[in-house]
Length: 253
Image 1 (spheres, rainbow, N blue to C red):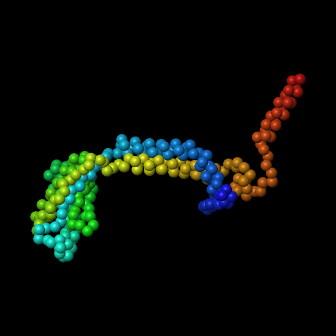
Image 2 (cartoon, one colour):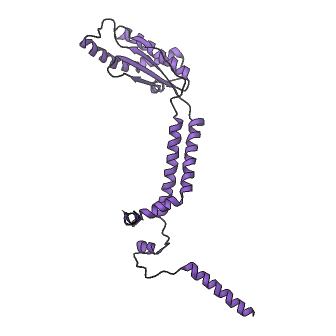
Image 3 (cartoon, rainbow, N blue to C red):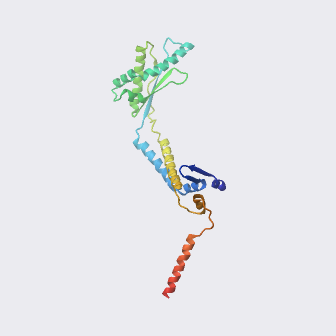
């Protein structure tokens, strides 16, 4: 396994050629494992604090109405297709300017049409003629009020402007009181992973640009020279120091 790692190399060609020994790179990263762990912890703690204390919690409330008039029959294929088509039309109407601006006026909201539209999400469950109106807001009570008012205004608008029977509101807005965002656990995990990868990236970059020659293999790899022999510098320096001390003692005598 070690021989395979030693033989496996990656060559990156730009202006210069950089050769990476994967085994050395892995060992380099492992030698800084404490810093990688520290970066992971810092990233996770930072993401947790931002999610917990900085980001504003958001709540959702959902109301529903049923797109089926009294004149339609659920057993008729034509009526089923008509109901499906009407559902698509109603989705456009609910998010339209007349409905949302009327909701803003009725509730006295400090919102514009565009800002309120961003808070509204519409959903039509598959194979159904039910339209779900979901509103997201920092205040769970306000989210419920807006969802209910949008449903009420939409039903009245459809009846008046489209010459259709009013859809039936089958569920008023509700909220379980739990914020839907931010997802603190998810953000904490992502922050830790990003911190870890950032630390590893710094180590890899430092490794790639480190031209220090540490051993005979580096001489051959970086300079393309064959090494005929090696000199144990630390031992030579130690022997030289002992020799100098011996000469000084002789002079004193």
